[in-house]
Length: 168
Image (tube, rainbow, N blue to C red; front, top):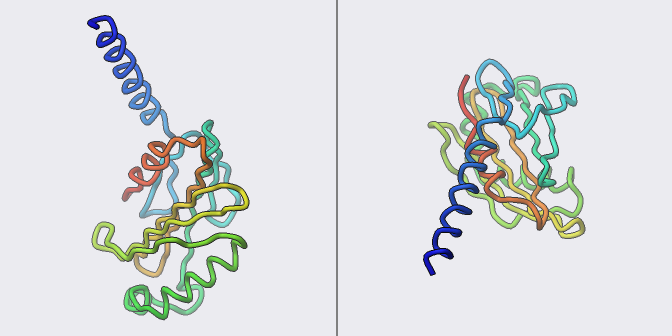
């Protein structure tokens, strides 16, 4: 009995240490002068403020920035629009159109450091992926953080990605 408890304790401590160590080795990626996020390894720059990486657990991570000032929206207008039902519905329609087969299961409007934030959960059933997205509106920009988790993916790693988002 004591041997089982000791073995369980050793496995738990080893797993905890490995998880903590793995998070410390994540790579900080600056998106712009305001925001950074950490990826499990150095991301590939896909151009125009888009970064992507595939983790060893097959979770895909993406971060990007869109400046709505380029579309004629200033920060005050974007701030007021981002909480409106009309804008949210247009956002969902546009998002689903860009990713055929994705079904949005949940979209919550929250705050992230006093800024409007969408927390989105969905799935891409054809590829057996759970989709997690955080969109943060700061000034005239929208920062989008995306994670696609396969059935074998470790949800804790997805959580580490989202919790690493921070100000520079």
